[in-house]
Amino acid sequence: MKASDLFIKALENEGVEYIFGIPGEENLDFLDSLQGSSIQLILTRHEQGAAFMAATYGRMTGKAGVCLATLGPGATNFVTCAAYAQLGGFPMLMITGQKPINSSKQGKFQIVDIVRMMEPLTKSAKQIVNGGMIPSLVRDAFRIAEEERPGAVHLELPEDIAAEEIEDWHIFQVHETCRPDANKQALKNAMNMIKLAKKPLVLVGAGANRKKVFEPLKDFIDKSGIPFFNTQMGKGAVSCENPLFLGTAALSDADILHRVVSAADLIINIGHDVVEKPPFFMHAGGTQVIHINFNSAQVDEVYFPQLEVIGDISSSVKALSELLPDKLNNNTAELLQKRQKIKQAIHESDDDNSFPMLPQRIVADVRRALNKDAIIALDNGMYKIWFARHYHTYMPNTVLLDNALATMGAGLPSAMACALFYPERQVMAVCGDGGFMMNSQEIETAVRLGLNLVVLIVTDSAYGMIRWKQEGQGLSDFGLEYNNPDFVKYADSYGATGHKVQTADEFVGLIKSCFEKGGVHIIDAPIDYKENQKLFPEQLQNV
Image (cartoon, rainbow, N blue to C red):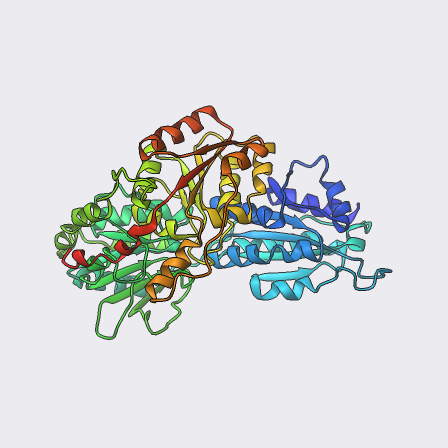
């Protein structure tokens, strides 16, 4: 059997459904072996689009998404996506080609040491030097990518190794790994701290936004009656309809929500991940923190928990629920009294009719137009903070945002992946005009695949978040403005349908109409960011 055939068999054994990518001449044996496989090749227009789609598959399923590129420039185009998956905790396998390693007549043409390049960006990076090792290397790659903390792995398949004939081979059985439970004494100590607390809060972080954690987490919150908030990447793990929900920590400090956080005497921090901007700052003698996670806490000046419960998060939360008394002796009513004031403050401009639209109105109207199970994939820009604070989530994994690498250009391919996986659900990409243009060529891919997808571009003809930071530091407004194409004509040129919003009142109806008609739609919605100053509202100091 040819080694590339064995590679495909090993991938099929792992349950791989899609390979996203752009093959090159060094992948031709692999590509030939892929014909007739149950695995579907999703050909993209840029390697970045392919890898963002693969990472999103990993994020949504917990199984490693797979992407393919050739050597040299094809592989280097994976670099940003490797960091995106690694920091975000999304399992992904990158497969790249290489010139023959046993003999070559092409010198150093296109050759870059991709394995060494990938090592600091991944959990594992290896070159395959023997075709017979492919099954074990593939099995190990998936194990490493998917185990906590999930991330990116890389395998390089040289051209001559792919063409090898393998006589003796064995496919390794896939088995589920059992994660260790937390120490029983640590759980008891945690419950003692919870019992003694007068104003406890639960924080849901990125590590708690996993399928196995959703139900135990909801049960613990409901049974304990402890109010909760979440980080940006923990958003949606528990429904915002829960009466104990306080909001999303879209900023690190001084936001409306932090008026409540600062009043708590204990924060039960479930799934904390240092890749996110900290959702609160600790200080000596201040609020105590229980760290519940797969891994021990990374201590720094603003995070030094008093207790750590290390082990499988799902099991830890279940165990804490079992240790709960019938009633906790706390005073969370005082914290919950602020909930309505927070909601009123955040949503005060939801019906503002001005045009260009305010970000609050855009977020409110997107929520009004979409079903509860709709998925929105946010690119990175100023609007991401507004969506993090204002957009209501009712189900897990219905708001995909990146607060780890926070890269621009990921929103469109992430939404495309979701539209491919969940054709029965509404899927929307929300992009700024800057981020959209970084991978806009993938609109052709979306049209070719026959996806039902709405792409919302909020346009201000500038790198808006950097402009906001520039203003906040008292610097001159300089160097951040650009021109855009006519997005309606741009959409039409790809065979998509373009729209430009003219008034605030038409926005909801336009979104609904796009989903009813199906296909790929691009909506150009001008945005007015003058409200950015309200992210630190002085008038709400007493909320």
